[in-house]
Length: 339
Image 1 (cartoon, rainbow, N blue to C red):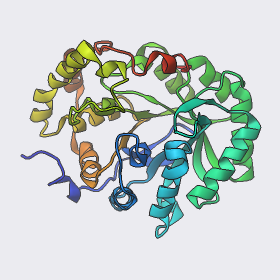
Image 2 (cartoon, rainbow, N blue to C red):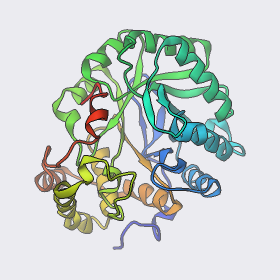
Image 3 (cartoon, rainbow, N blue to C red):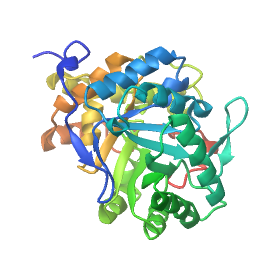
């Protein structure tokens, strides 16, 4: 048996599908995250970015996740270019809105007022070159705007045909319940990985199960802690998990999974993706990829099967709460409704 990597996984098609909650769309799993194609973790040429998106679509992938603030609109325009010679129905486009940026690209708050929601969508539709988005979600909770008003505005866009489904991102159980009382919610996008398991203990996972809401899990690879190069540059150095003794401890946690990955003929990244997928049929991992080989590898994760004994071994190697350091710096953690 050989590793399911770039040399073997290109023969595997992405045929695994999951429904995002009781009211959401059916999508392929894993989904493709677009953020890393817009300079967050280093420059990626647009031609290379299009090749990454095409590799995912050509393998049968459908779910593409983006945000109107990724590269200040660049990511949406890149996706539009990649879809130009494809059927719009080939992709399920999930779009986040509301994050504000300064001219140099730094975050400067959130705006989820109803009038801002509708204006943001207008620009996204233009950049994406489409007449609708499949899932539209606020990137964070705007502390100045009741969630009922924000999702109420998205609901109006659903009724007008510009949006197909309403999603949420990084909000806690109380907010999820309030939003779901206004309109059906397809899925919650939130960080979830073998290193980030807060949703298992703070009630969010149980709330989503109870209400029939799917979960699209991001940072499944711990921003490169799992299966990455190990290089810490300016884009990661300010993250608590990548600082000082925290980094050494967290790397040792990840290394403890290597034997399990080897036994499964998988890479560490594939094991981590398979672990998230195994946590529930309503959970879809979303993986950011900068290279075609990474797309091929993430598709290969579907060939990794984990039974209860495997999951128990992984839990023993990396217990919930074992990671050191918050997932964001303090100023950003303070902005989260789900922390």
